[in-house]
Length: 106
Image 1 (tube, helix red, strand yellow):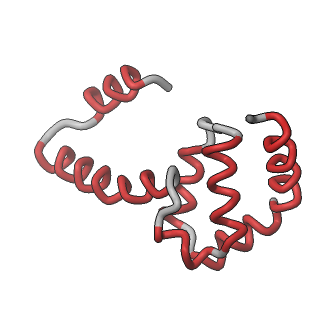
Image 2: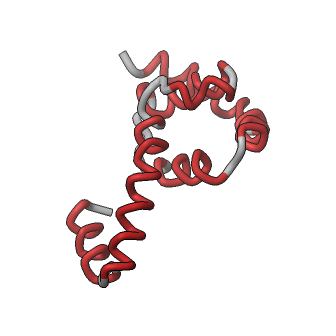
């Protein structure tokens, strides 16, 4: 989805003072989590080293963009325990991706 598509969708679905205020409030609230996805943000301190490393690998090494909305949803709706549990169940495949990316990406 491109920025123009997003703006078009917002323009057609967000109208009226109440809806606009709710939309802006939600966007402002989620901006912190979205920004945390790209950095070594303090938000991830409770998640453990492996989760922080996997987030960095996804963004910095693999440069995966299409799952950012999923990452935002996890950051927004799942607690630390559920996130770490899900991350652990996928850590074997993530670890394989990380080791491959370190060989491929300079």
